[in-house]
Length: 303
Image 1 (cartoon, one colour):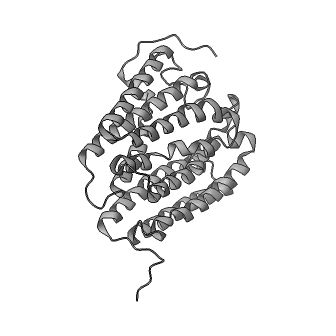
Image 2 (cartoon, helix red, strand yellow):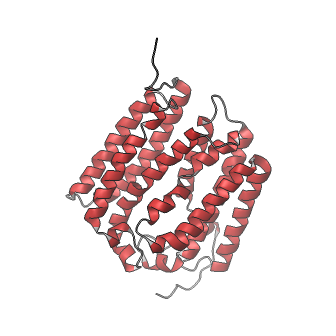
Image 3 (cartoon, rainbow, N blue to C red):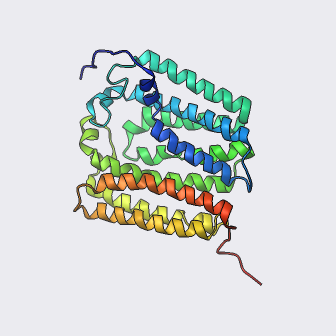
C-alpha cells in the first residue's frame, strides 16, 4: 500500500509516537515500585528524575516501534492513522526524535539517578525496540510471552532508582506484569486477528486459532491469580492487598471464562479493557496496603 502524501507534523504527532497511554501505565508501576522499596517517603530526586528518565526511554522505544511497523500500521485498522504511517512525521525525523529523547533519558538516569537503573532501562528499551519489534514479533507466536519481560521491567526500574540494588520483591513485581501480559494482549489479538493475518504477523490467534488462544488466555489468567498471591505469602504485602488481589483476580477469571465460552462477540475487548483496569487497581491496592496496614506472611507462626 502506498504511503499517504506527507502532511506537516505538529507536537501531537510526536506525542503520539511515544504511545503516551502505554508509557503512563508503565510509569504507574514504576512509581509504585519506588514506594514499595522503602517504608517511608521516596526521595523527591529519585521520584522526579527516575520517572522522567524512564518515561523518555520508554517513549524512545515506542517511537522506534512506530518506525519499524510503519508499513504494517498503514494496513491495520487499529494503527493506520499513526503519524509515520500517514506521512505526518518523516522516518528520518522520527529516528532523530527517538535518538534524542532516548539519549536524554539515559543522561538523566546516569547523572541524576544511578548507573544500575540507567543500564537496566537501556536493556528494557533494546528488548522492546530491537528484540521484540525487529525480531520476535515476526518470528514466533510466543512473541508477546518472550518479549513481555521488557514491558514488565518498570517496577524494577523504580525500585533500583531508589535503592540502587535489585531486590527479590522487585522481581516479584516484574513477574506479576510478565504473567499478566499474555492474557492482556491475546484478548486484543483475538479481536484484531484479521488485521494481524493480513500483514502476516504470527500472533497466536493467527497461527494456532482463536480457540487455542482463548484456552491459553484462561490458563495464564489462572497462573496470574496464583502469582499475585505471592506478595502476601512472602510478607511483602498484607491483608488489604490479599483481599484486593483475590477480588480482582476473580473478575479477570470471569472475563477469561466468558471469552473461552465464545458466546459474546464483545468479550475479547471487554477482557482487554478489564485487564488494564485490573493491573492499575492491583498496584494501587498494593500501595495502599503498604502504607495503611502492616504486612504479614502466611508462614508466620505465633508462640
